[in-house]
Length: 142
Image (cartoon, rainbow, N blue to C red; front, side, top):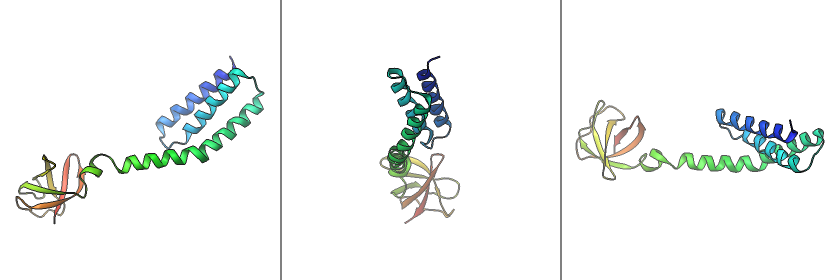
């Protein structure tokens, strides 16, 4: 078996490990292994130099690329979905809302709602959305 093919297999193994541990750590080792596979496909290099180049590429990717990937990951996690659109916004109760049941409207949408402190909130009252669990908005009276 050609050594470049072994590097491809090593790279794929690192990608699979990254799938199960999404920390953007093993991804760098996999990319470095594929770089070595590409180099070794065209130019045969001694194994010791391949390992040395792989270690240098992995280190550089960890130092330079991983922080950029983590920064982008944090930005998308914080500014998407329910948190960005609803949490902290004002809504209006369309029926009395308490500990067990209730409904609010926001952006023309009706949502199941609960009072965050368990106290009854009357109909047609402006409330603030505190959190969302299982498609139920937890609100407090403003």
